[in-house]
Length: 505
Image 1 (tube, one colour):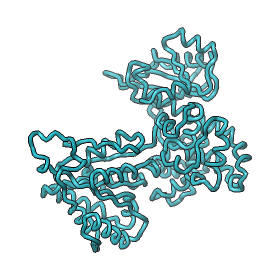
Image 2 (cartoon, rainbow, N blue to C red):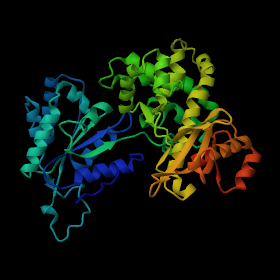
Image 3 (cartoon, one colour):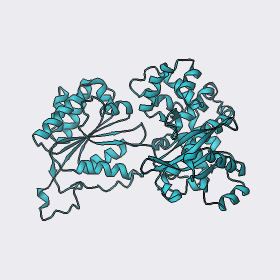
C-alpha cells in the first residue's frame, strides 16, 4: 500500500512532486522499479530528494563530472558506508547495481509506513522498500553509456525472480538526455514506473516565494527570473517596491559579479548535443526579438529554413522554446522563448554586453528599457493572461479550458490580419472537437472602448467563435468608458494584474 510521507517543513510548495515521490518509494510491490526525476537546473530537484532519502533511510549519491573509475571508487565508499560494511571495492557498474540490490527492505517500524492501517497484521511483518537515488545521472551516462542497458537487465531479472522491493530514482538537469531514456528504442522504455518533470513555480507561487505583495512588482520580477526557485539564492536581496526595481536589476542581475549574469549561457552549455552554442544562442536571440516562425527565424539569421529546423527542434526538446500551433487553423506553428531569464538576457544583456561588463550598468539598463517593455514584459504578460484563463476556465466560463493559444484572423474588407493574443478552447461534443469559449487581447498598455470594438469586429469574422466571450487583459488598467461597457454586458471580461494575482489555484 502506497502512502504519502509527511512533507518536510522547509519544502516550499511542491505538494504534487512530494506526493508522487512518496507513493513511488512506499509501493511495496516486489522487484526493482525505476523512477525518473528531471528538470532544468535550480528548479529544486535535489532538495526534496535528499529529504526523501532521509525520511526513508535511503541511499543518496550526487554524481560529479569524474572519470568512471573515480566515480566507482566514490560509490564504493558511499554504498559501503550506507550499508555499514566500510569501503566497497567496485570494479564495474554491474557491481554497483548488485550492491544497490543489497539495500534489503527493512521492517516497517520506521517513518515510511508509520500510520498505515495494518488490518490485523503485525507491524514487524510488513516490509518497506529500500530507496536509492542517483542524482546528476547524465554525468554518469557521459562516461558509462552502457548504464541504461545494465539497468534494463536488472529490472527484468528482478521482476522475474520476484526480488526485493527496491526503488531507484535517477535524477538529472539535462532534459534532453533524461527524456531520451524514455523514448524510442531506449533501454529503459517501458521500465520506468514514475516520470516526474519538475517545473518552475507558477507566477502566483513565485510571488509568495519571493515574499512580494505588489502584483506590479511581482509581474516584473517574474518576467526577469521566472519561477526558478534557485535564483533567489543567487541574489543578496529582493526588491521591496517598484522604486527599487531598477537598482536591483543593475546591482543583482546584470552586474558581471552576479551568478545570474551569464545564466542563459550556462543553461545552454549543460545540455548535451548542443555543441554549436553560437547557433543555438542565435536562434534563441532571433525568437526573443520577435521572430516566431521558422521562415522569419531563418531569414533573420541568413540561413535556409531547413538549416534551422534541427536547432529549433532541439531547443523545444530541451524546454528552451515552446512550439505552438495556431489553435484555430492547426498549422503555422509559432515559437516562443519558454524561460523568462533566457528571453531577458537575449533582449537586454547580449546587445549591451560591453556596457554591462564595463560596469556601466545604469547606462545600459536605461538604454534597454524600451526593449524590456516591448520584448520582455509584453510577451510575458500575454503568457500570464493565457495561464490565468486556462486555470480559471470553470469560474469564468462555466467550462473547463483545455487550451489557450493564439490565432490570426483575416479581415478582407479592411485588408488586414488581426492577431489574437487569446483564444480559449473547451472540450467539444460530437463533431466539434473544441469550442471557442473566449477570444481576447492581452496588452501592457491602457485599454479603452476602441479595443472592445475591435474584438467585437473580430468575433464577427469568426463563425466558429459565435457566442464566445471577449476578454481584455491589461497590465496598465482600463478606461472608465470600457469599465462601464463591460459592466453592462455579460459577454465581456476585464482582467488586470490584481485579477491575475488574486487566484492561486
